[in-house]
Amino acid sequence: MKLYSTNNKDLRVSFEEAVFNSLPQDKGLYMPVEIPQLDPLFIKNIQQYSLQEIAFTVANALIGDDIPREDLKNIVEDAINFDAPVKFLDSTTAVLELFHGPSYAFKDFGARFMSRVMGYFAKDGDQLLDVLVATSGDTGGAVALGFLGVAGTRVTILYPKGKVSKVQEEQLTTNGQNIRALEVDGTFDDCQALVKQAFNDQELNQQLRLTSANSINIARLIPQTFYYFWAYAQLKSQGINEVVFTVPSGNFGNIGAGLLAYKLGLPVKHFVAGTNVNDVVPRFLQSGSYDPKPSIQTLANAMDVGNPSNWVRIQDLFAHNLDDLRALISSYTYTDEQTKVAMQELYDKYNYIACPHTAIAYMAAEAFKKDFPGEYASVFLSTAHPCKFPDGIEASIFEHVTYPKGATELAEKPKLAHDLKVSYEEFKTYLLDNK
Ligand SMILES: *Cc1c(COP(=O)(O)O)cnc(C)c1O
Image (cartoon, rainbow, N blue to C red; front, top):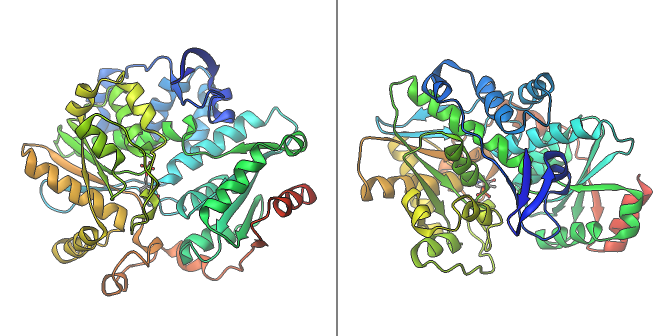
């Protein structure tokens, strides 16, 4: 796979380079020069394959030239070692559950695959790969558990003290091995600023091989296409061929992967993006003008994004043609009050407990069905297990949440975290003293 930058179509970099840089220097995003078409027979018979077989076929079509077949197979099988089941709530509405991985959120797909790809490429180098990541909750857990035990890598996670949920904090701080957690006496923005400064620090970069686990990394996007194919396979095995996917969106990486799957040949009827009041994209689709804004805090906090970093990629995928985008993507926006009502409705009607992000997708799916009725399965994506969001869910519902077995075990492990003030000097000293 060769990649260009959305800011420079003449640029050509290898997959390996794109993985380690995350971003081109011109601050565009990497995009594949060619998007291969999957064999129509594969799509026609897709219900015969397992998730891992499907994942390998898709990955091989994209990066088969960069990683030999057997190695890629091992990476896929090691990374995608949990299911993503489609569960029907009624005859036409289903939820695609993406939270059965180690951090109970869909980011496990991206983080686990990327960590193994980085570990694979890093093998030749003699220097340890130091991954720095700031998190407001979900990303850090997926990256920590994704990189845990991956040879040749070490992860340092900065998280804001007292501002992540219990399960999230336990996922960050109970790992040991090659994972270090820094509990920062500040906000998520402070954490992000410290990490950014480290990447720009020449002296530090001379001593350490720093890399980011950024959500716009191409190695996180690719594995997120897998579950769209797998969902389609599950529907096909039930005789369903028409599907509309609804995706709760923040940075638009998840839905971006769905659109990449579509470009690879997955027959999807329509995509729907559900957002919270951070509605830059819904406004754009309506008006045609893109106006990023400072983010607003909501119950669905993993979607509190004022300037979605993957949107450029989606624009690029459709050659900036607004009519083509509108023909394939719809979007709906919801307030916290509406999100609470939706969580209650899911619980009362289907006995289903959804996290706030998932509830937004549910509402958007229902809205689209009402606006465009038809003979299709409406599948909304559940991006996280409700146990991660005790503050976002009414207590009367939350008390019925069943914790995954692993989450109860985590609670018994000792917390390993290093306290850090919002001080770049202190952060740098920590990194250099603990090489
Ligand atoms: C990250 C995240 C999202 C948003 O996904 P994007 O790819 O940024 O659009 C939605 N829900 C949960 C639970 C998340 O962690």
